[in-house]
Image (cartoon, rainbow, N blue to C red):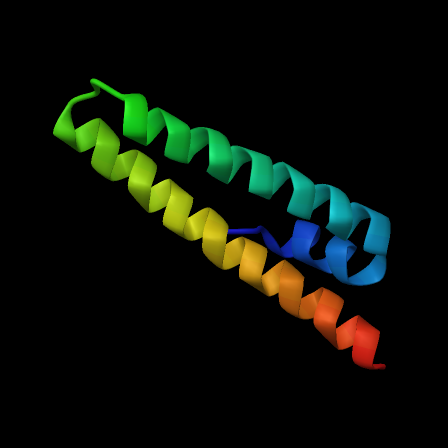
Length: 72
């Protein structure tokens, strides 16, 4: 989850928010590729999948911030 300070900074500054979005998108893509190609044990894969799901939720929050800013 995004910490409160980062979330506040993303609300204030569109450039920071866009950078965070780009970083999350890249991290999700890389993690999903690791999951597909991985020979990790089940617990490690479960952990990685959980982190991907959390990152996707964070990404949705940032997308909503962008959408809100566009409509204002």
